[in-house]
Length: 147
Ligand SMILES: CC(C)(COP(=O)(O)OP(=O)(O)OC[C@H]1O[C@@H](n2cnc3c(N)ncnc32)[C@H](O)[C@@H]1OP(=O)(O)O)[C@@H](O)C(=O)NCCC(=O)NCCS
Image 1: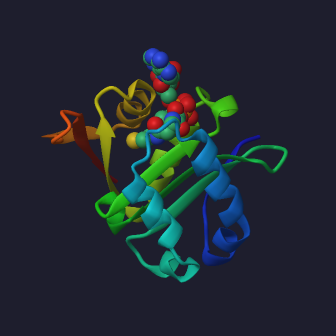
Image 2 (image 1 turned 120 degrees about the vertical axis):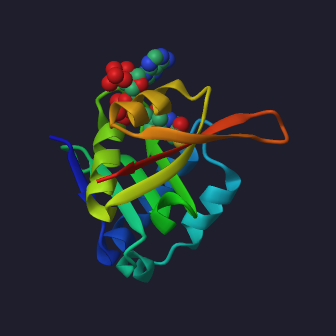
């Protein structure tokens, strides 16, 4: 059975290396360097803040199947990655629901050509409230959900 949970500081310390590997190997070039750096800079004590959350999904063999992390309710940074072999099972939707339940609100940015991410986001009841055209021409949506 898949287990979606909010990490506490101790849990973050224990899973940190696995999370770094998941981020490195399964992000499909979808996570900005800036977000990856902010994640690497996160300290376990930051998890005591009310605007910070890390959600993980662990499979029945105790493997890390997915992760979602944010600071500033996602306005500062957020990232979400699901292991390639575990996609399409609703893990992203479960983690998005969990983070909204835990923080009370959550914000993110998603590229308009990231179909799986958009499906998971809108499938979890998020709304898009703004859009940005990057200097590169890339179009992204700002999304949010409140409890
Ligand atoms: C985006 C990501 C986290 C989604 O994880 P996931 O656990 O597979 O997501 P879910 O199963 O909750 O939902 C995915 C939805 O996209 C759909 N989907 C996936 N690929 C699709 C495609 N090519 N075309 C149409 N729909 C697609 C799935 O069917 C599912 O929708 P459904 O439940 O309505 O059928 C995962 O693909 C990932 O890690 N991608 C790389 C990193 C990334 O893009 N992160 C997000 C940055 S904002």
